Amino acid sequence: MHSDTHLTLQRLRSTELHRQADEFRMARTVRAPRRSLRTQLGWGLVELGLRVLPNRHVLSTSSPRAV
View 1 (tube, helix red, strand yellow):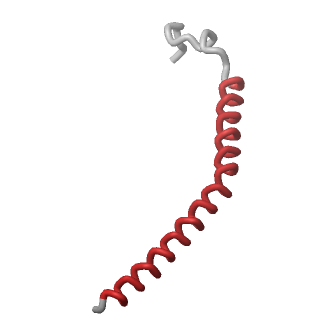
View 2: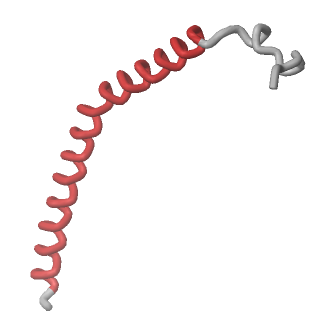
View 3: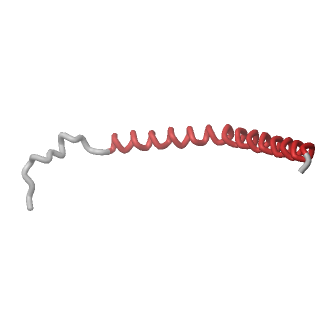
């Protein structure tokens, strides 16, 4: 293969990779707020679940149980 042909192919591939990298970066920045919303919603549900659960001192493990 001639060096000019090899250099041309390398430049074409480099341009293609740069374009794909830019598209990937743009796709990541678009999805970032959605992940943040999921995280906030998840932690909100955890906090709500902890509030709904009864207090631990009410459910004592050392208290006698009826069998």
